Length: 423
Image 1 (cartoon, helix red, strand yellow):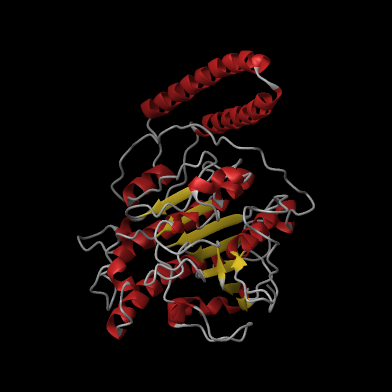
Image 2: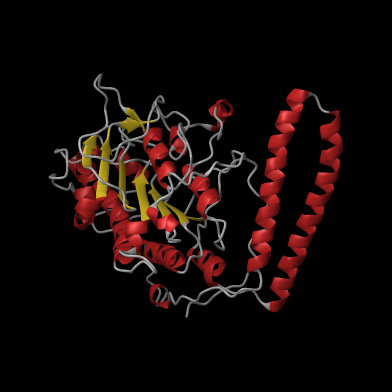
């Protein structure tokens, strides 16, 4: 068994945000049966070399390019979207809008601010799980996930600590300490409630509207504390990852195999239903066959064939690690339902940058798999005027798939239609 360390996960506050309207009309058949719907998002900071990511043919009868060739077994359950973006000027720094379509500095203009879709879905499906969402990025975070306060969620950047968080039980003393912290947080909330009541009485009508939103946030935090309390004394599932930590030759492949195995088992044991895995810009990929340069350096390749080959090797590795995880989900029967766990898990791969070589934020490399969606193969999402589709159109559809009653999401113009040849 892996040599585990004990620690108490930092106990923080809940999300300050408006509650979402849940639609029974849009709820999936899986939800109606009590079968959980899940979301797995995998992203990288520098996009993808377009010639090796996007197929040259549209529809379902296409040839898989090298970067995504490890997903060929999913041909009938995959959608690759060409020509999507967030309508932003190209350059570094825009990629943090990947999962919201909104930069922090422009977030005030949108109802959900720059809250990322994983957190919105987690708020919908995470109430009955130990962890509303799970985040990993081995190295400096690429800042994909943002909470309702506009703060980026810090992922686990260490395999051991992620393991401890998910599968290490607290000692008796640590459980007692956790309960004390939760009690203190409750006391703070009680004091805030008392002060809040007096402030609201003296507030103007406009300020009362804002304070009502704040009251909703307090209720969310109270629910979060109640949820944490019920899990303190419950043991976590056990998982043996020792095979990845034997000997001194620990590679990037070992580390990400461990990360994705933890995600798979967390889904299988219903520890969480939302997971986000990132590939850090600082990762050392020299363990990957054919790679001798740094990740960022490979993006600025000057179209030199040898450097492009190294970049494609890196990007192929990223997709291969995800494909391995999807294969495990597909080989695991869904408890109490027909099909596999992958049939009830929506998988999104992509980046907030189109291609790092030119710092382009156009034509983002986006693919969706699994989840029981009616997949469309490779689709050109441009409209009749040749304009790229807002990526938020896809996000609107995914939110609706999870039973959320949205008519618009940030910069969306309409919902994306998962049918061949449709935009």
